[in-house]
Image (tube, rainbow, N blue to C red; front, side):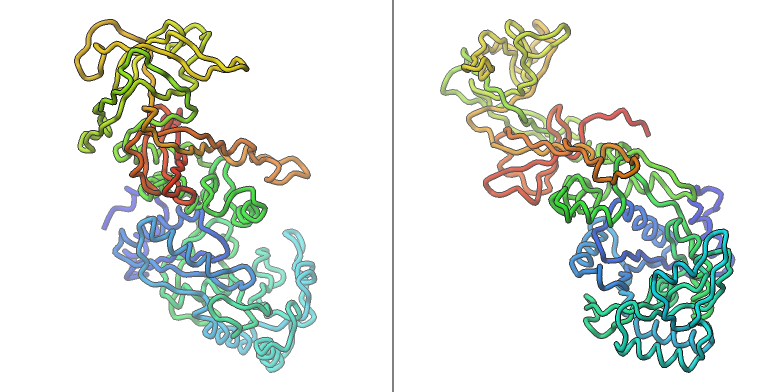
Length: 550
């Protein structure tokens, strides 16, 4: 077995110790999302951690839905989570729901009551909070804490039978109201919720709390290592208490690690839902969202996300990862995979006055100079082309090497052209420029005459394919909130810019989720939501370069 000292993953070291000591014979992990929203990049870290850990030690990973709150959960979220996990490249060994174990959990709660370890409480949620005490003050026992076992069994059964209203009664563990760990001060195990459950319908009107359900689920599934984020560290004694007092045969081990935090990124499902509900974005899969579905629609690949999650690793301390690091991994992944092509985002018409009017010639270009196995493509060229508006200036500053009156530039894959005339409308705006070309300067012919300092991209105008380009910036401008502010006060009003332009003629064959590198503009993905047979829509995944160093 691998020497644990060679690994920087402290969780992996724990697993190695447990296997070597004989505590566990086989590693079983689980990914246990609540189906109350779509998964985000933070969940991806947990998915990669759990599945990769089990795979490394030839173990198993279950996908389990912690569906104990019917008010917030929905089949839509179940379906999206399954899709996301599979898209990331993982196959779960077992597919389970917390609701599969509701009868088992009920029976274990009855066992606690019979042991004098749980009681039915009539205090309201607000009263329970006030009785719980603080970090410096002990809690106060509920006046209902010492009900008899028989009374508690009767009340709990009546709770199940629907005799009480929501909030009228709860089942609490009887542990220690003076514990220094507030979590252990008689936590609620069951609450009443007269709501239809996505999986069990109206069979139940009482539902277990997460802190009670989760350890039982792990134990039933023989999970060995229950990996969760640091906010559950204080809950670990309760996790162990439930397993012991409910007399579960299997003894999982809870391990906590620091959750993923990204700069300028909302990582709360509640806040993400608010963005969707208030139409700040156009859905859970909006490319500005950090959801896995949003990243997929934007154009991120499973490989890029997995490699990012592996690189950041796991730690016990809180930290914030620069979002540019995630961008680095998609650039690295697409560098050898994405077809190179040319797209004009803000077109300006160019007429090459000395080029034959009825002629269209085909020029050859490499699909990816860094991966020659991707072959070549044919690009049409004629006297009418589009260039970027930014590639022409009538009165350029010093050091400007693109097109301006009297200057000569190279057209990528084509010829030298020289600007001779500028056409303007009545408002004085440049609408068209006239140029001449030098037929001796064709790319690939070994021309060694004069040199030019600028090379610009272009698209032949008569065969150009109209396209929409969606350019994204971070959705959140500043994560620091002043008093009275919410995160919505820091939404970037320029997080999305939509422009209309053109792409090369051969792009008519582009399909949703195809990825391209547009010369000088960055990597783009064909949007699966808005692209139709009559309209191509591209999402910019990431710009070409970044100052980020890994």
